[in-house]
Length: 57
Image (cartoon, rainbow, N blue to C red; front, top):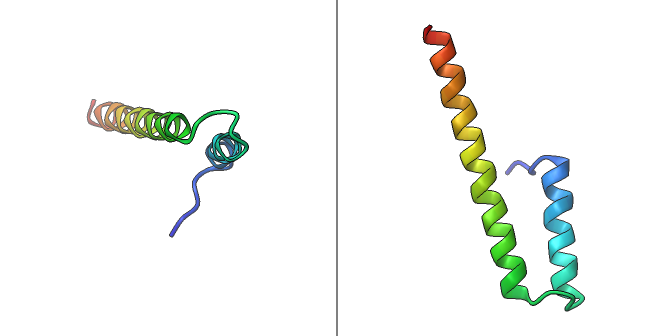
């Protein structure tokens, strides 16, 4: 298993800490974390597809 990049790990740890300290409710923290991961994966896919298109050109 591979750890996520340091910036992402810090973000997710911060969200988890906020939820653990009840500064935000855990469903809100979970929603933020899932949304962040979806956005990150979509961004990676778009960049990968763009790179492949450049290679073909």
